[in-house]
Every structure is written in structure tokens, then in C-alpha cells.
Length: 91
Image (cartoon, rainbow, N blue to C red; front, side):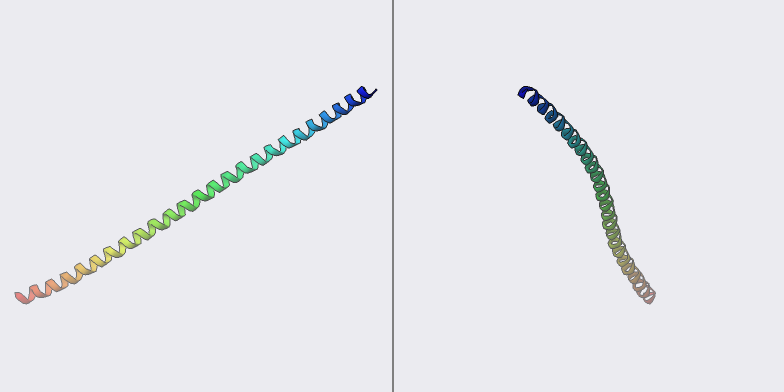
């Protein structure tokens, strides 16, 4: 009789553990899927931020180069005006 009760108890314990393990594995799978989705979102967000930063740096660099070119152009214009003035004075 004790053996039968022990066997029944073992059976229900085994069934309970099987159910708990099954629920744990399903939950683990859901969490894994959720983590994967979050990781993909974070990767996409990081990529977007990196592209925006790259665009900003490029825009700043081009702005500085444009300022330098404008400075050179202004200097050449001043030189040309000055040279023309002296050139006409000598003639």
C-alpha cells in the first residue's frame, strides 16, 4: 500500500515537474524572442544614430572647407582689384 501511494506521489510529482519545465521552456522561448526583437531594434537605432552622426560630421567638414574656399576667393578678388589698380597706374 505504501509502495502504491509512493508510486502515485512520484507520478504526480513527475507530471508536475514536467508541466513546470514545459512552462519554463515556453517562457524562456518568449523571452528569447523578445530579447531578439529588442536587440534588432537597438541595432537599427544605433545604426540610425551612427548615420546621422556621420552626416553631421560630413556637413561640418564641408562647411569648413567652403569657408576656406570663400576666404581664398575673397583674397584673390582683393589681389585682382589691387593688381588692376597698380597695373593701370603704371600704364
